[in-house]
Amino acid sequence: MEAKAKDAAGRRGRLHRLVENLHEGELETVETFVDFVHERGDPFLRKLMTAPWDDEPVTPEEEEAVRKAYEDIAAGRVHTLEEVKKEFGL
Image (cartoon, rainbow, N blue to C red; front, side, top):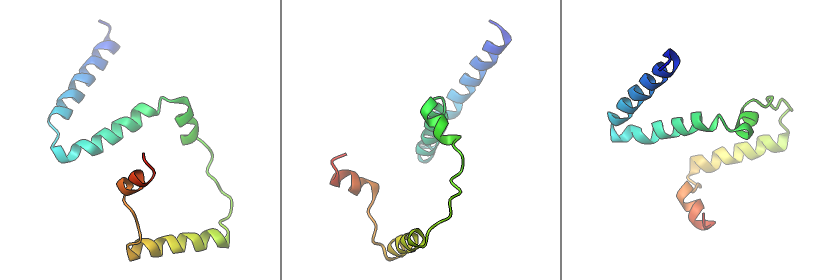
């Protein structure tokens, strides 16, 4: 086995051991991160992640919408992701 392949196999083994020893509360965070890393290989997602920053000025209407959204959050006028999924049958 060439050195590069051995190194990759060693890294995979180490990652497997690390995952096996995670505390239950850490699993979701690690899963999210691994999904992110895995999806970076998707050409569409890679394009999205490398797209230029939107540098258009924010309009007064957009600023007002953001202000209202933060007020809604502070007042508890929000829904969980599960509630939204249920409402839309997702």
